[in-house]
Length: 388
Image (tube, rainbow, N blue to C red; front, side, top):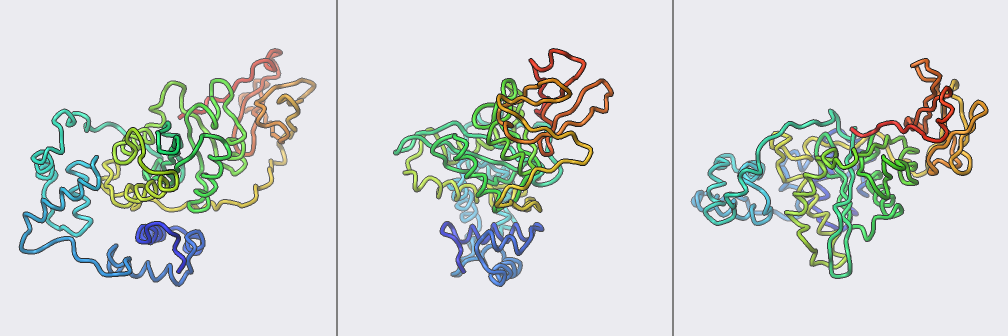
């Protein structure tokens, strides 16, 4: 059974969770590099025995009858030691998930942490509730961004994070050596092969995603659009548009990233993978009623094509090829669009407004609107407001 090197238990649990959430079993087995027989075996073992049944060797139970009070406090401190950013509610839920049917109240756990000097009183005000907005289904929207850069023994690491908006499932936490297009595309290809394609991705403004205020489309975003993924950018100078990923970054920094990394490049990705698994499968999330993200997430039904699909438009579309310098010729006039589309075919569709304007599409995404009644429109293209 060729499970890839990492935490074998982690991979088995991720496989089972994705399978039970409705992902295609055959495709899932292929992406994890195991046979269907092995896949169904681990699903059965998990259903009958829970996470402990995924181990190759037996484990002792977490709870210890006869020393309940002392053991509970030890478990609280042990979980806190593994997850320094967790508070009473998350630790309580984790204990319940581990089999403690009578886990102490969250307030009791908080008292234990405070008694051991693990909570500063000044931190309490940071945990107030706020109104949340989220997509209804998994893979409807992914939030993607770099978490700046952090020093490590061999230079700098640029962590790339991708979060599912609906389930808060971290589909990727990649240790990148740079923020170039080729690096990001390689990371995305690996992620798409395992989890499939999302309907939409929202990114920050800047390379390699593009900048909504200046040039919102790059070679990377064009590649994503060719895969049928709608691309959006956060509103300029409004990082809260990527609020869930920003909040994810806070947890990421508190629990593993810090101000620098002590590991060499070869070790960093392994550490990131271990932390990502813990975040998805063990860390209760308040936005999910204290469920873990893995309990809600399932892989996309849109599989990643190893070859880019052909660009096709409707029979009523007016199709034009984008020439050098981003020029599109239409009805005897020239219109300029971003250089990223040079050499590609775009489609023009008459606007329903009936004002002489045409909507310009690339694959399934609306790029801009051109107005034939405006004789200066070739000088200033009106990009479609795309932030959420």
